[in-house]
Length: 154
Image (cartoon, rainbow, N blue to C red; front, side, top):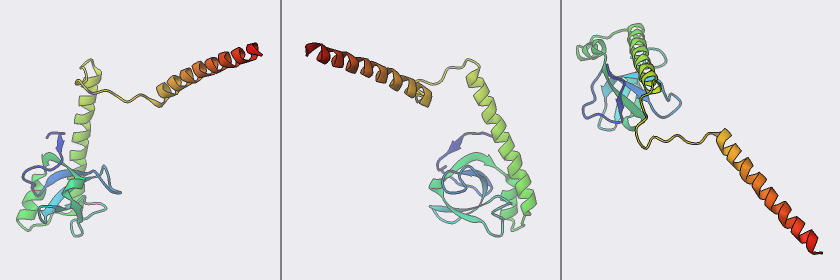
């Protein structure tokens, strides 16, 4: 199982694990239960979206993982329904596996592996505030000096 995801893979397979990228359900894991056309798929999670009432999602709003749950794929192909409880268990297992892989990658990157070039983090709010306060103090010093000059002329 790979934790890498793709925006839209070449072949979308029934049983493939996806993550929602847009909408109220953003970040939620689903399994593809049917491919409607080149734009939409039906997804279910066994909990909020059950197999008898799958959610219609635009492919552009999904992140496709390389993981395919074979039990779901075989069940849909043979017109044999797996139950929602089993789907939820399988999806939870995949979610935990992907999360642990992601944590392992994060740990590796924090253990001295350098970030790829061009990966520059944004300045934090605290650093922007410090920069702005320094600029503000400098500006006030300049303004006071200008005011002192004006007072000394008169």
